Image 1 (tube, rainbow, N blue to C red):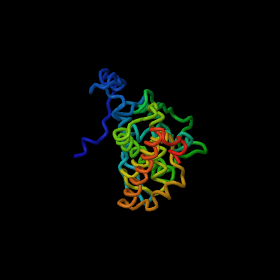
Image 2: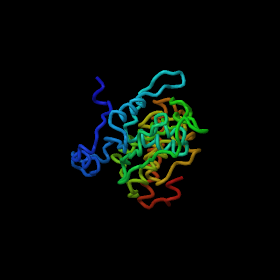
Image 3: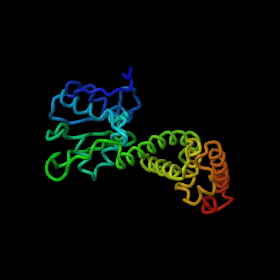
Image 4: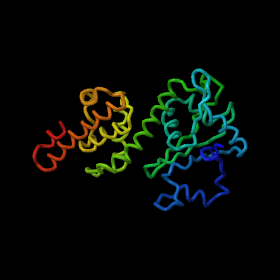
Length: 262
């Protein structure tokens, strides 16, 4: 029943054509890089042992012990997990070791918007030995922060597509700078309590016209009803339209860039 969203484990040394497609980036449908297709592992364990190890991560219990599905095999999700745990060897070790057995040598996560990959190697510790036991695998404060970052990332990608379609990229920002701007403005709006993607998209359009984030004090002024979908959407749209008029006036030479961004 869950076959369309379930993880599949494939030994790539027996699938050279799939391996080539995974590392090919183009507009052709056969190219899989950049399409959130897979994460790649290097392991000396057999595929049966590796499958047994990975099955432990398909669900993660919350603080009350209720299991939650975890799409760790999604490159966006795994990228955030490995990045969020890079300075926490004890938690990170769980993804490489099972008790005293190292199952995974490396995780290789394609960076979907960039021509590079995130490479994570096993921490130099042996779980359950010495002074660094692995914390319980559950949604604690550390994982909650990571999952919040995933939500922001996902929302930023959705908003990015809408903003490109509606206002374009007037400053010709390169992909990495554009992605960082979309993530930063999405995080700013979420911290301000905004919940409506369309409303956040209006604020993101303002950030694109300015090539920078709105000042922190602006959002409470322009969107005082953040958290109330209908009201925050109307207020963010008014902010959008006011800044568009300033932007158009600047483009037409009627005001200075400083005034247009005020």
